[in-house]
Image 1 (cartoon, chains in turn yellow, blue):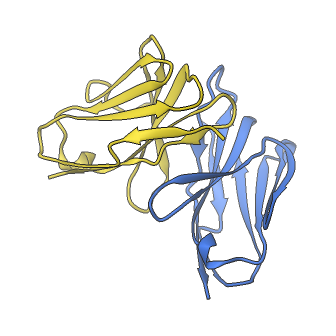
Image 2 (spheres, one colour):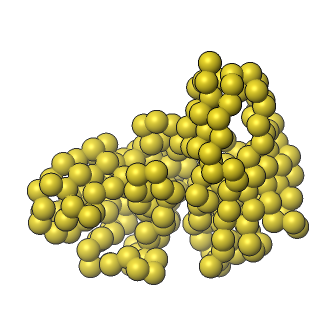
Length: 112
Length: 111
């Protein structure tokens, strides 16, 4: 199957700072990638669809100015959590693929 | 939007037992996948199964698209099967392969 990497695997930051998470497709080209958020003991909630060379598409209720997505190449999508607050602490996972979807290992964000 | 319901929400098994996990979805889909989320959060692909039946070792899955459900069978369960099993569907959303996840089935296999 396809391989997706994420970096960092975990990050702790202070409230008010910004955090960037990278998602890379290692063995396929991804015109779209997907960002999910998972709170403890809950399911994965789709946040946005990252589109190579164009604006991301956000799901209802997700603040596009807070969660900045950039998809500058066919192998890299980034999610920046701006002015992070404790309620943004969560597990963030990215995924992509041509038909079958594959997911990165996730990034655990803790905002103090 | 599409609804994805998984049952049971929790399942406890003795090692060696068999189980069936169910996923119902409320509308037609392009794609359906089953995942196992391990304790570190990694989603492991089990099946890509928009229709039909597939088997992989002790696991098998069946999707009946016309009746909008899928089943995941685990036979001779092992402690390493513990974790959360998610069903996810790609609704006919026009061009994207985005997946909508069910709430999951939390499986614990005891020795």
